[in-house]
Image 1: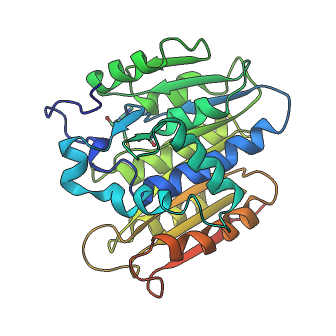
Image 2: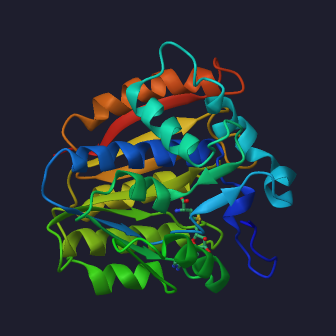
Length: 292
Ligand SMILES: C[S@@+](CC[C@H](N)C(=O)[O-])C[C@H]1O[C@@H](n2cnc3c(N)ncnc32)[C@H](O)[C@@H]1O
């Protein structure tokens, strides 16, 4: 089976699948999905930038950057540890289900984490703009009647699909590649519009933290927007604001589940020393960007 998509496209998540940023994103996503699944009423999962769904960590592209080795690679090694938080255990079990022989070879993307939590009456709607990637995703989910995958623009989908007609509760994941210089602006506008259309939905946005501080501008834009209840979970595994590359990443959570900030703080305090290259450098931060 191949999970590597041709080299005609610009952004390819295979180069980054399972890295420390993916680990943070998928742990936060899983925490939110589990909170939704605690209530019997069915939920909707809408993924605006779904990717291919499953990644081959032995593919040349994955091995070229080897980013997964300092993300899921390090976390995988903690499976037998005594003090693994329940959310991490849950996450590792989902990864393990895709690696039944016990060796880490594949890494599930956001749609598969959602699929693992979804009950029979929950619904997953996925959007992926790269046709080849979307075809792979469609094939992966073809047997699951809860899932529909669309080869279209995830930002446009927020306008077309919200508020949802079929479910009253749910979560939207906005996880763009951030390769376009306008992506931060686009994300901010899309998020504000989407929350206005569906004020009770939970919204998750992944963002990179770099020296350019565009993340800080996004947070300032959201503070000025009038939106309420926005939690930010940030993790810099090197020192923050190093001049080059990605220093860390964050997740915005609009309308987080009750006491989610506590769960995230406990999680990150545990995660950082496990994964950071130097546990004394870098930092974790869970804070209300805008409180209730
Ligand atoms: C960061 S990856 C997604 C990873 C995935 N959410 C996960 O966690 O496994 C971003 C994906 O968005 C796709 N993409 C880029 N622009 C898009 C758009 N406007 N609408 C939908 N998908 C887009 C890219 O092809 C890429 O597969």
